[in-house]
Amino acid sequence: MPLLAVAGFLFDMAAYYPGQMSFDAAYTWWQARGGESTDIHSPTLTQVWRILETRWHGPGAVFVLHDALFWGGLALIALGLRLRSPAAIALMLLLAFAPIVLILRAHVWTDVGVLGALLVVSGALSYYMRTLHGRWLLLALLTGFYALGLRHNALPALLPFVVFCVWLSLKANNATPTWLRTSLFSVLLIAVMLAGVQTINARVDRHVPLWPPLAVFDLAAISIATDQLLLPRYTVGDGMDVAELAEAFRPWAVNPLLENTRHGIHEPLAPWSDSELAGLRKAWFTAIVSYPREYLRHRATVTAALVGTQSIELPSTLTFVDAEFQYRDNPAIAPNTSVLHRVLMRLAERLRDTPALAAWPYLLLGVAVAPFAWRRRDQPSAKIALVMLVSAALYALPLSLLAPSAERRYLLWPCAAALVALVLALSRRRPGAVAYRTNR
Image (tube, rainbow, N blue to C red):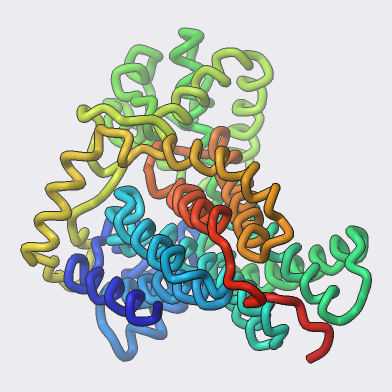
């Protein structure tokens, strides 16, 4: 299995190196190079990139790191659970060539980092179940901390792993892993990890609240539905009306609204006064309470675009970005121009309006796999599958209310987790291969 993982890693290097950079990645790199840092995007990634930048300039270092986590995590799962060769090969190939994973892992995105980190967590816990060596718990905690720092919404995805980690640790130490004891230790561990992430976040030059873009998006949608301007007047330019909002509004992302009105909308990530934030928050909550039907219809439309098969008329950037976006004084990056890269990008363009690059088939697969994993929950592989499925569900469900756009990358982890869970739920371990130990 290590050789297959190395082959997959080399395939990605040939196809994608130095990694495809959207605005988010370019902006993070600019911060890592010394630009004003904010917590709009992951300060953890900024700090890691800053360290890597001292020895390895450009996005390639982060791309290699995240790709190594991806393939290393898959190898750890296969080896930790001692999967039979057919199941291990199926695991590697399924994740390698499932279109949504194949295309999206080309990018220097935090979403790809979260995917790789949680795969390593899964693999480390697989090894810990079999060996009870503390180094595997340490690896799970370190990579889990990295995942938590990469995305502001990563906590729900990490929570099931933390609970399972604590439960395994209590069991290994001959303590009765009651739900009360497990819950208490899990809360303590999460609190410590969150404190660490907050310490990193506090070091940025400027704190930026992340909810105003979502509030503006929701308020604009409700305004159009009710034919009345519900955005506070200080958030829009003089002369703004509902017709202008409707002309610029697109139900699949907030960015067209922010960029295409004639009279302008307050840039949500620009500085706000406390009173302005308070007024926007009040207007947002009041509109949701006053017009729940319009609000839910809007969120359902966003969710449908996020999960469903997208029309070819929608921007390809909702799925993939075949570019090296340059931000301010970032040095220009030479893109990958290999034949393999061109073939894969043509494939991505052909598939982007098909179910192959939609999230719904993968999410439905996860739902279908769950009963099989539950019935076999005495098997270590099924335990890992269940933890991954719960993690995927907790990560995906809040996006129905919190997603500011329908970008596919938001659901990369749930889609990949469903594929891994499929293999693990249906695989049979080698006789006597995995068993709990009662001492260290």
